[in-house]
Image 1 (cartoon, rainbow, N blue to C red):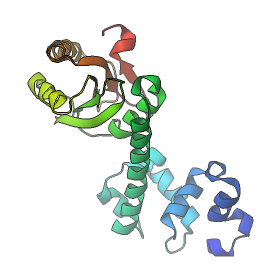
Image 2: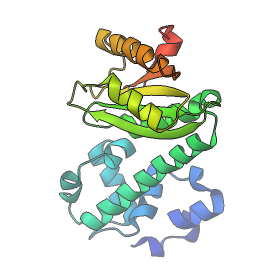
Image 3: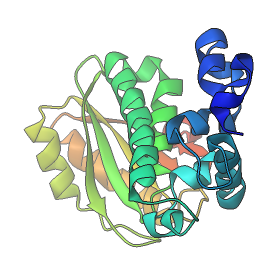
Image 4: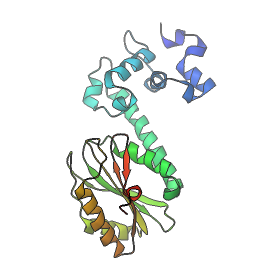
Length: 224
């Protein structure tokens, strides 16, 4: 039986419209995104199978196209839809961050940074450039490295801060290993960047290290 043959109050789309998205399971939400199933599986069956295969929503939303499309009945079209939904979520969080004063909305900031950086396969270094009221001007990924390191040049960070006329910045980088604990090299880099940016009147508000479900704040550690 297809979903259209189910009782109305059991169909995912109708349940969402009547009770809101929070009332639906992960599989039901994914089924709405997928729209159709494959031979022998409804969209809900397919969604449950995908979640089990890839270890939940996070695994599914970050899977490579090749692995996704290896699943029977799936192809580039459904992969594109899933990726589009993920990107829309990230952009929504980014817009929320831009509407807020960064320092008074740490939860919004951390949610956005976790979504944006946690699952990157390589280490990247970024700056959130802020105005005098600590509102976000722009987020820029300045350097991208390997699985365990990214070379950062303070001179380039200074140039970008001047370009954006920033008054302050939050430094951000991820640890693809999943362990957010900063290294001695991370601490040394932060000191050098803080000193270099101070010469042009730009304050380093914090340095956040993104791990797997955990963020370490240099400010909270008392290192800034």
